[in-house]
Image (tube, rainbow, N blue to C red):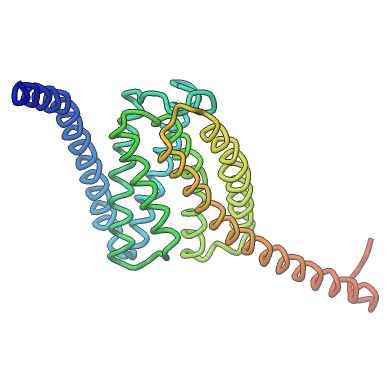
Length: 267
């Protein structure tokens, strides 16, 4: 009797896990295809830009992923749905799964690149690791893809500007009006979207009873990482603003002295 019950329970257990196992295999295959695609794109950029550094080509891949993920995640959040502020923890849609697998392959590629070339510090590595874990958890659970997709949108919306800033610096065009506009938009978007809107999303996530507790913990961890980035960005913005102010004040003082000395014509 006991043995019969045990065999019955075991049969039900393995039968219930047979479909998730196949689903996990399909998700792994999608993520591997995504990784292969990003690696191929990186290799193509390296062949096309042989005179450029490896970092230049990697940032081209990052820029491409940023534009693609912003467009797809915006479509999911604003058009396809569901709305992340009212439906956190809802079941994943097929489009969400496709986008998450696409992004998972990119983050694995970029994390591996950063570790191999030792180009980033612990904070960026922590951000990539948390992103990978968050995506994997959403895919395995089959839920919470809504808020993970919203976090993806908020995280990537400033990425193209960050890459443009680096490209401007590398080409010698950073100290210009274009560089100032890029910096201003980057700081404004990071503060408004990633910190401001991110706080609203985190609040909705925490008060909702639907998401799992470890998904909420992951959301808190990502928001803490965003604040760590924010402190660095604000320090940079403050230093640049002070430098611009002193430059303007020095130039204004020189012009005023020239006017007083009669060397500068006034109308």
